[in-house]
Length: 196
Image 1 (cartoon, rainbow, N blue to C red):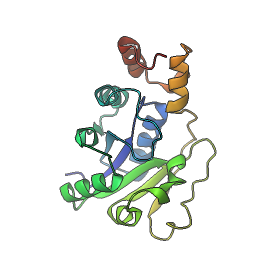
Image 2 (image 1 turned 45 degrees about the vertical axis):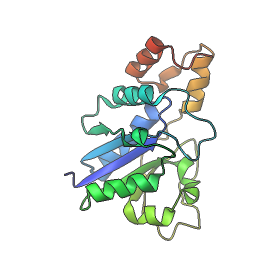
Image 3 (image 1 turned 135 degrees about the vertical axis):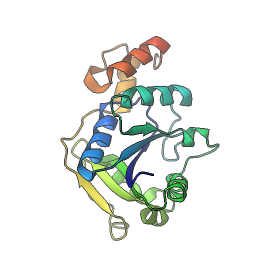
């Protein structure tokens, strides 16, 4: 049983260098034993469903995090039917690892709307949060929840990459830059993902 672990959720549509950087920063700076990478099935705060199937997103996540021996891709949310609420995943993990330190890793974009997450008060009791700066966004919790969540700001250079921009570039047949791990880029090409 890990004494401490990170939880990195998201749609990973596709997984990119920013996701990996957040996991690495949390693992290093917080001394975590491992980071659980958990692709979502149906994410509640996402306006449109993922373009890639759950199977493709899981496969890409495994490729993206393969160089990180301490990372574990976990398929619990894609196996779940219906919307994947973070609080339900946190309850599962707290039941499985009751003595472990559990740290939910998020970007500054998610921190800004953390007060909209379901049962955030319960979630705040089940996990700590670690936030990685992104695109110059503030790294302060919304005032309504700042008093009861435990938050660590990760000291890392902001990563300027987004899945939305990568999907747009791939759909237009443009280079995706350095945002995609090479193995993920090869997988996308092999399976003709994100073509318009």
